[in-house]
Image 1: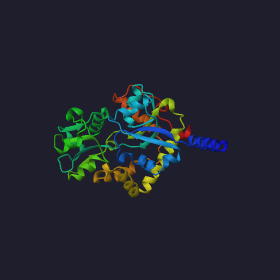
Image 2: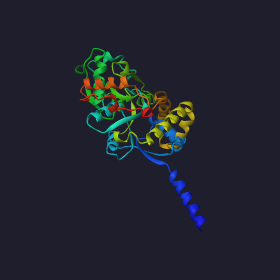
Image 3: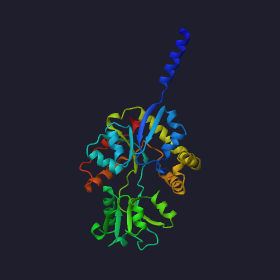
Length: 312
C-alpha cells in the first residue's frame, strides 16, 4: 500500500513539474495568413518543446489587445508599431518584446486600368481612408513627397470598406490596404490594383506587427521561450511553405480558399527571421516622425519602447 501511494505521489509530482505553462496571446485580428509563423509553431509543437501552452484569442476590436495586456488580462498582444507608440504616449504600461513583420505592409491603391498612373494624378481626386490616425498622416506624407498637399485631394472616411469603395468607384484611391491581402482580393475579381508604397514615397520605415507585454512582466521567463518557439516557426515556414499551408488550411477549413492561399505565400517574405531584434535608430526615427506630425506628444528613450530579451 505504501509503495502504491509513493508511486502515485511521484507520478503526480512529475506531472505537475512538467505541466505546460499557459500563455495567452491576443491577436490583432481574427486568425489569418498574416499570423502564419504562430500557427506553424503551434502545429509543429515548437511551443510544446518550450513547455508552453499557447492560447490564441482573436479580438472583436483590433484596438483591444494592447488594452487587455495593459490590464493584465492577457500575457501578449500582437499589435502595430504606430498604434503602440500612441498607446505608450497615452501612458499604457506596455513594452515591445518581439516582432513578427519588421516593415510596412500598408499601401495606397488605385485601379490599374484607371486614370491614376502616379501620385501626382491624385490632385483633385477622392481618397478613401479608414479610421486609423496614421492613414491621414501617411497620405499627407506621400502627397508632400510629390509636391501636393491634403487640401488638393478630397479625403473620405470609408471606415473598413476600403476595397469596396474603390471597386464601386466611390473613391479614386484608397490608403491603408494590405499588399498581402486586399491587393490579391482585387486581382481575384479581375480588378487589379496599381499600388504605391509609403516607404518609397516619404514615410519612414516601421514594423507592421509587433508583440507587446506589460512592462512590469519583462523578466517573465515564458517570453524568451515564446520567442524561441516563434523563431523556429518562422524558419520552418520559410523552408516548407506548401506543407505548412496544407496544414493550416486543414486546421482552419473556413480559410481554405484561393484568397487565403495566395495571401499565405505572399506574406512569407515579410516575416522576420530574428523576432527578438529591432533597429533602434529606425524606431527612434519613426517616433520623431510621429511627434513631428502630432501623433504623439513625447519621444521616449528607446528602452521605454522596446527590449531585446536575448540581452536581458
